[in-house]
Amino acid sequence: METLLRLAIQKSGRLQEGSLELLKEAGLAVNNSRDQLKARARNFPVEVLFLRDDDIPQYVEDQVADVGIVGENVFLEKKRRNHIIRKLDFARCRLSIAIPRSEQYTGITWLEGKNIATSYPVIVKDFLSKHGISAGIHEISGSVEIAPGIGLADAICDIVSTGSTLLSNGLKEVEQVMRSEAVLIGGSSLEPDKQAILDKLLFRIEAVKSAHNNKYILLNCPNEAIQKITSVIPGMNSPTIMPLSKPGWSSLHSVVDENDFWEKIDLLKSFGAQGILVIPIEKMIA
Ligand code: PRT
Ligand code: ZN
Image (cartoon, rainbow, N blue to C red; front, side, top):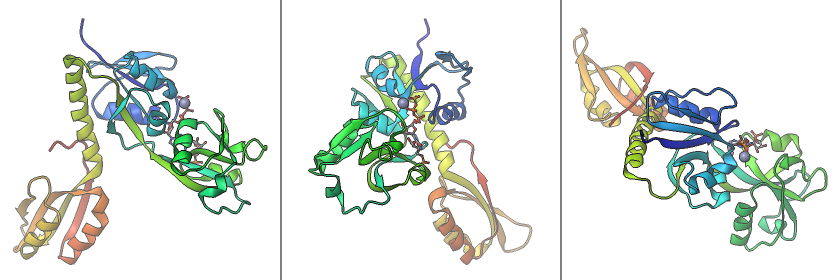
């Protein structure tokens, strides 16, 4: 029987789209019709299991799944025998403590002796004990943000993304407990043929992620500026330079990191670059 790497992803919710999108960009054709529990990629030895995110760390520990995609917050909360294989750079959010806007927050000691409602009791307990605070923790599984309003708790600890849920519930964020993003987790070590499939998948994920972080850049510049410009955008190896039909001018092609993109553009302009074109890269293999 053919060896398959079993990858658990969220069945429905905030991680599902990003997980499927990543697999698609990595070239895996996965059918996802509603109500199915698993799907075999048509062109890659991976079987995708669709599960509730909270259950994924356990399934990975029990080797029902070989690897899984969850939020870092869930990974930390579940404290299973899992490790992070790779951060995946989507579903970014933070886990924060929030209190009613009308309260005056005096620092972390404000929380001493208070009641905190959360779906993340393990993480909150760790955070409080790290700061020497003792507070009651009230575990609830959903709609945590309404707890202070109905008198269930003095504070909450929940996922924040834009902050609009807190705002519309009259709460303000006072402590950031952790930052989170989607992560690929694994359990115990894999048999060699599964590890080989995982390595192949990771290679593809790497190509997809570096493509997202880089742009292809084309520009025209006077020949005197080529050296200076090359020092700013050296590219993967070195830029491609082609003469323009206009004497003394060249066209230069390279790759630029998305993160310091705008600063570099300003610099390139000051060196005399013109006609700058920036194009997304589909895949990038160093
Ligand atoms: O059904 P299942 O158990 O699988 O899903 P779930 O309901 O437990 O999880 P889901 O789909 O809501 O979230 C899955 C993961 O997405 C979380 O564990 C986080 O790692 C990540 N994530 C990213 C978020 C958010 N952004 C987010 N905004 N998870 C939840 N929220 C919620 C938050 O709980 C709050 O209610 O959105 C609200 C806050 O959003 P803002 O934009 O108003 O601040
Ligand atoms: Zn969940």
